[in-house]
Amino acid sequence: MDASRSSAYDRLLNRISAHTAHVGVIGLGYVGLPLAIAVARAGFPVFGFDIEAQKVESLNNGQSYIEAVTSTALAGHVASGRFRATADFAELSTCDIIIICVPTPLTKNREPDLSFIRNTTGIIAKHLRLGHLVVLESTTYPGTTDDVIKPILEETGLQSKIDFFLGFSPEREDPGNRNFEVATIPKVVAGDGIEAATLVQAFYQGVVKTVVPVSSTATAEAVKLTENIFRSVNIALVNELKVVLGAMGIDIWEVVEAAKSKPFGYMPFYPGPGLGGHCVPIDPFYLTWKAREYELPTRFIELAAEINTAMPRHVVDELAKALDRRCGKALSRSRILIIGLAYKKNVPDIRESPSLRLIELIEEWGGKAEFHDPHVPEIPTTREHMALRGRRSLELTEAVVNDFDAVVVATDHDAIDYKAVADHALLIVDTRNVFGRLGLLRETVVKA
Image 1 (cartoon, helix red, strand yellow):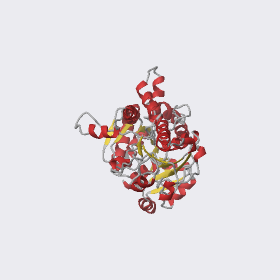
Image 2 (cartoon, one colour; image 1 turned 60 degrees about the vertical axis):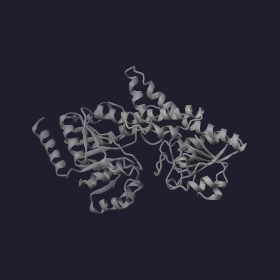
Image 3 (cartoon, one colour; image 1 turned 180 degrees about the vertical axis):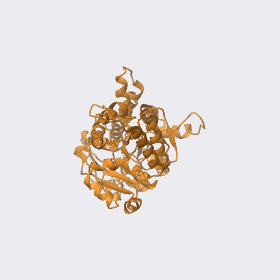
Image 4 (cartoon, helix red, strand yellow; image 1 turned 120 degrees about the horizontal axis):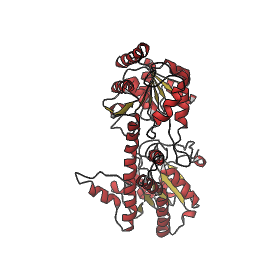
């Protein structure tokens, strides 16, 4: 490293230590915005970049659209000048550290869609300069930082490890979990080379309480996938047990509650109507896709995905059986109320929510489906469920509940009057065991 390049490294390390390094966070969604505010709270000046002008305007007015970031906290950082949102990516040149927090969805063929990463990296390349630190946080397959991002940036003539620094640190957001926030969740970090690793570690140590360095960016990428594959496989196992034990007349929730009394060798996972969120239903496919390059099978991972993907259909089958046996009515002539559109309780996040698939399947049978969700007033535009956009949440009143042939509890939000539902619904299909937990079991309740 020559003198000018060495001084660029030393200068950035000093600016990180003094918390004067300017940080740019690209993508102000469920990952990017909480991270940006955590970085601002740590004392760094932060630019938040997003292509949506409405988001930028809202944020600069101190109005948050994500529950993990309160408008009060946001407004304070905006007023202090510590945080500013912008759609002008030319301002990347004024940043010392650039963090990429863009979506990594799947294609229709369940293959990685890196278009957001590629496009964002191309924009960064236009403004890349000597001494920049670029960190990817988006979940992806091992090798993305080295094989996708680095070549795009090096097309500028600047070289990683020499002219700029490159790193990876996987996001670990858990929407709705108030026990943890960005600053208190241990952060896995890695860099492309010793200097990059040192810079990435130094930066995140200034933002979060615990930093966990690993040997390479590919290892850090694999850590994130491993965490979510672990969840996917275990949820699939308990979903399969639900079906098998249910056929034997055994309650899976009672089994899990008893099993978790064992103080070693067991961790409870719970069944449900399917997987949702931006990680667990998607991330395993990033590894299965990459494994094909090495001609290696990933049967365990793919089987888990197959089981979890089948759960919405299982719930609808159980709903149809219950309507026939208990009400003498066909699903094709029934009106069904779905309680809970979000993929998990107490959040407004509907990404990959199985509730959307439940609505589609019910209507494929010829039934009519509506929903109630205290956190989701209207179904927004989604890539996979365009026909459902614009549908609005119904008010959950006694008259509304009575007006439906069955209620399906897909998400067990706390802000639901389950006693009123139990008292007035003609039939309840409970996919979360919420009525069992609350001691509200009735003859009208069917677990699925």
